[in-house]
Image (cartoon, rainbow, N blue to C red):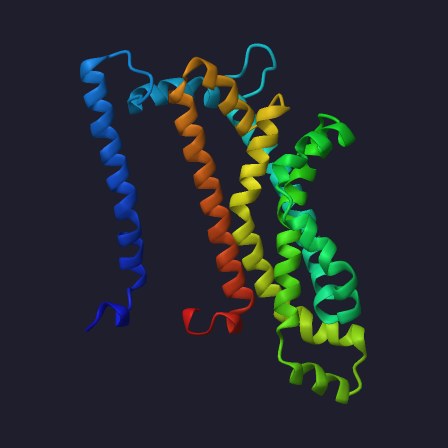
Length: 271
């Protein structure tokens, strides 16, 4: 059987997916061991024992000044900002994307504006957001929204605009007006695409969040990474990066499973 025709079972998929990760971990351990054999105080590739020791105080010991468990406080702050930004972006994409996709006059009027905003590098807007909203939470959430909402809106609008014209004609033949077509024909078919758009936006959303926290924050995963970088504290930076990656993977898996459970018809044979 040719490779292009092979089907991988679920258990085998998990095994195959774990192989590259295990290989990277082994490669890191070998490289770290080699560096420490030459220089026991090397900070660039810390050994697992050093990472566990450095993270123990952040995870399990309260901070002397604030009394907070810094690792969990950073995680909660970042997830709160990310969650609010994703929620606003998702709602905006659903509402605006539906209207743009189903109503040609609205698409012709506001489509170029959405496209123009989408092509602006969001990081370039960060100083403007800080000036407009200050250094508080609003500017950080706004950067996430500005960074991913236009992309999501364009994606949903394009998906709705590409629906077979026959569906809209049949709905109108049965007496549906424009809003009924939007709610009963376009909305159900937009929901799986919306979840997919959120999945694709997770990576950029994390980038914008970390960027905002690195510049103006006193708590958060990005803040902690950029705070300790001046001390070359790779024993903290690497676990934080791995934790961010794990959170992103869990969110992606949750979205994928939710989509397949709620909208099995949109996944066909992959369900």
